[in-house]
Image 1 (cartoon, rainbow, N blue to C red):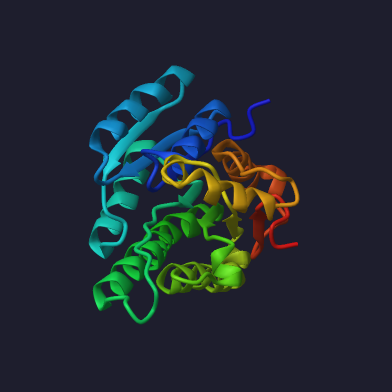
Image 2 (image 1 turned 90 degrees about the vertical axis):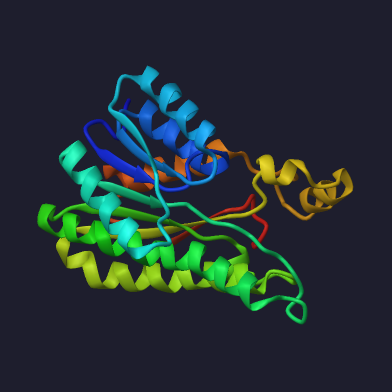
Amino acid sequence: MKLLQGKVALITGASKGIGQSIAVHFAKHGADVAFTYLSSVEKGIALEQELSQYGTKVKGYKSDASDYASAEALATEVNATFGKLDIVVNNAGITKDGLLMRMTEEQWDDVLRINLKSVFNLTKAATKIMMKQKFGSIINMTSIVGIKGNAGQANYAASKAGIIGFTKSVALELGSRNIRCNAIAPGFIETEMTAVLEQKVVESWRAGIPLKRGGQPHEVAEACVFLGSDMSSYITGQVLQIDGGLLT
């Protein structure tokens, strides 16, 4: 059963990790997929080729969602190319970790701009299209760090907590227009980023998780499919933790 048949989705930061898995799962479920990449140009091109095998319309865009004008132009171009825009997944993000006393203004500004401002930019741009359609599902990628905080990640935690507040506010504002807005809060997900960690660090993470393992990108992607599909038609303003029970 293809849960996203006939829908058009836009996914930011999809050239690797969780974003890439989301794009693949959306295409598998029948969605036409537009996605963005920024620095990983070769991976973006490779992903476009990979997704094309599923028989849906696919297009990658080199775009920076943290730039307001670029986000506006992206949403407009996707709408013109695909004819509509049903689902937006705000996945782009970075980390620039450091203890608060050593954190620079640049580290703070960069993380807030890319992680939080990009969500505002693209959501606002997409909302203009969705309001005319009287339909839409917006999925914002936050983190359990945005719920509980984390030493050495004050900038990242602030950006992800901001996404949660933004998500709930958008859900309240746009529910009457049949536009839903939800957030997903991944826990310890094993991606290219975690692969560089020392094994003892990984094991300590796993030991604190009730399911005793890290999550996989596809487990986040499958939740995105659910929130993008009509199966979640009465769900909005929620934060879905995908953390193996870590914050339980």
